Length: 114
Length: 114
Image (cartoon, rainbow over all chains, first blue to last red; front, side, top):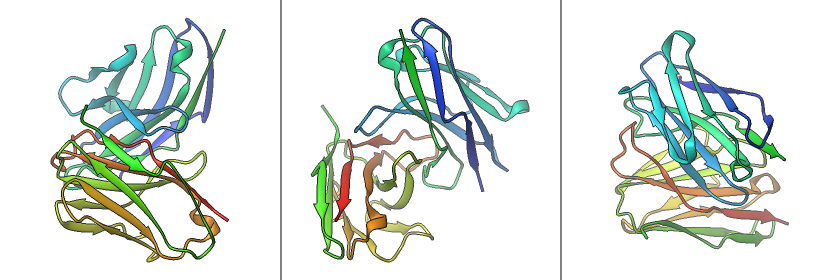
């Protein structure tokens, strides 16, 4: 079965600093990987996804992620954090034959300080 | 704007009293999903519909049922809520059920069980 592991349940960065949220996956077949963001009391919104085309994926709000098969990773980055980036971030995986069923990681709460 | 709507946003019920949560979509997507998200945890898939075909997750309790009377609407019925069922319930849709599809989430219904 496929799974994702998010290292660090809480990450705190200063405004303007680099954001790095870690995600490692486990899958016996080629995975499709997603990053979703959840603001308080709201549903999830797609930031970006890897669908086996380009390994460097650019998403909304200045975020990007790189699929690294050798490291089984799909870390999310943003060069300069903004206060509005404070939210919960979920990495998720799906595989062929699962009707786009997503398996989510446990999430990373990003705090942005002045 | 095309969207996923959930009603109510907040629902309070009593222990053992049946409750129904509602989801509607204007995206005309084939697939609708229900997730349960407990505090500080990842969303957990309960079941999904591909058109009228119902697909239950193996570990979803029998207490949880769903109906999809038409393309636009999907309901989550909790027959006898227990204290452990207090959670955010998220509805999501995807266009065609492919593993690369984006899922579009509603804002969620927060269920409190007294």
